[in-house]
Amino acid sequence: MDFIPLCFSFSCPVKLKPDGQQPTQPLLCPHCNNGALVPFKSRRWFEFCFLPIIPFGSDHIWFCNICSESLSLRYYASLTQSRLASRQEFFHSNTGANALSSTIPAPVSATVLGSKSPCVGLARTIVEMAPVKTLPSEITATAPPEGGLAGVKLFGKWDAQDVEVKDISLTDYIQVRHPVYLPHTAGRYANKQFKKAQMPIVERLVNSLMMNGRNNGKKQLAVRIVQHACEIIHLLTDQNPLQTIVDAVVNTGPREDSTRIGSQGTVRRQAVDVSPLRRVNQAIALLTIGVRESAFRNVKSVSECLADELINASKGSSNSYAIKKKDELERVAKSNR
Image 1: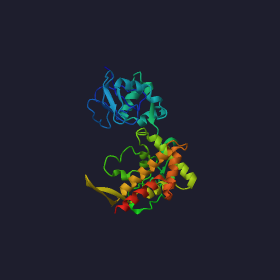
Image 2 (image 1 turned 135 degrees about the horizontal axis):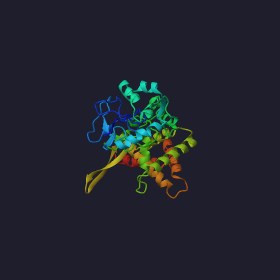
Image 3 (image 1 turned 135 degrees about the vertical axis):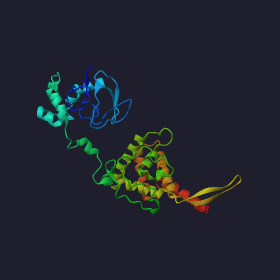
Image 4 (image 1 turned 90 degrees about the vertical axis):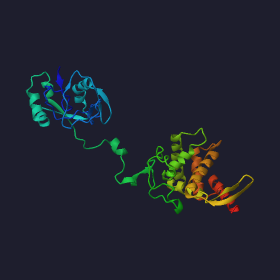
């Protein structure tokens, strides 16, 4: 049986006898060009400097520790001979015995150059990995800015650095200090009670728009509605839409409410103060309820209705549904003090 070590730096396998001679190169994954292949049975790391001598006829399954790609040794041998050398986007070629001897350890180089096997001509061509100096423009365009979160803008337009929460009691519950590109955090704030206070306020508004059954799960549609509403707000007010949203939430959160005390026949209402988190929750709910009611059977789009509701609420205008409901709740609470 013919024994060959499979070495990623050769354009073809190098024939060696199974007497312990081993090249000092790892077995590179042909798919990701980064991971090391590991036997599927043992799932143990190789020693970095050694490559086991494997029978060519062996067809055991190996897998990559980086991309988890599994392949047989017979398939890897065919890739080593044909495909690896032709991947010019990852490698560049150097020909000649000088390049070969400068890259391969001396015992292996002498074995290859002095051999009379049919693969000597192919073994004289070596491919080595080209150094990566600059990243493609597609990657650098999506990379985070060098200044940290200072350059992160919502939808790539609206900066949250100059947004101010005018009510000091709501500062910790209206999250604008950690800006995001898109209002979608995949539910990472839903696994613990009260952790939703750390969710970006724009995403909470987006999630509240997905109400009333038929709208459940349509997150992308809700994100587009909020994005278009931000554009309309900027055109009408020439202000940062994030500041308008924050002011609307601050103005529409009721400070006082009433609760039922007693049981069965003797029930009375008692005025109570509202916690900051519930103020934010109620404000977002009232804003989105008003948007749905105003957009129903209306020629205006839901984005236009959302923009009008946020602008009126940020100004404290009685044209806003949320402002009217807030005044009603506080009026009922005042009468039950």
